[in-house]
Image (cartoon, rainbow, N blue to C red):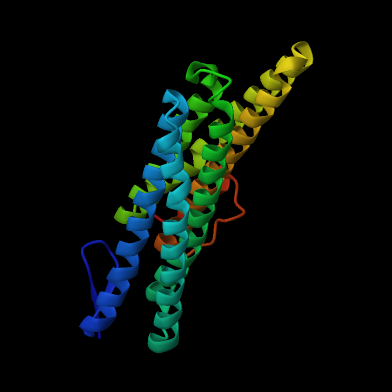
Length: 241
């Protein structure tokens, strides 16, 4: 026998099953919080030249990897023992996929912190305007994608996916500016390359945030929008409200 909860998710007479599903959702949110803090530490460390904060962001990757493996095990056990169906199966699959994207975010943020460490001795924080601007956009995407997952909010998830286009445009603009700078000032090539790697990692974090939003849309709507354009996602949401 099933019971529909206030957030629209189907609950069960089996309290243990409900507990297991709640646990993987809670752990996903905890992992997301770690990613948000890691990104915040990396960006503040870059801005202020705080190498200790950058090291904190780098070391956080180990904790994130450990939590990913734990969540993978939890999801596998639920599938093996409970053989979930319908919305329960979508929940486990969506969480499993979101966990993989969060772990990859952690890897990219670790790369950002490592590159920042190599630049701090040569450049003051104000030299990274493009990185800081795109970093702010990406941080909002990450936060909103997690909020959408917590609230089962497909409309907010769509807004996150839509925002990825803005990040891509800013990324391409910054890349063109940096290539021009390297051509005009060859002495800055090494520093510019580190900035390029940071921008590339930030752009990828944005991509993974978009993926998390798409997994939530799959969970709520039951439709895979992983390879859909923003316009197609909008149509999907309109048709299934």
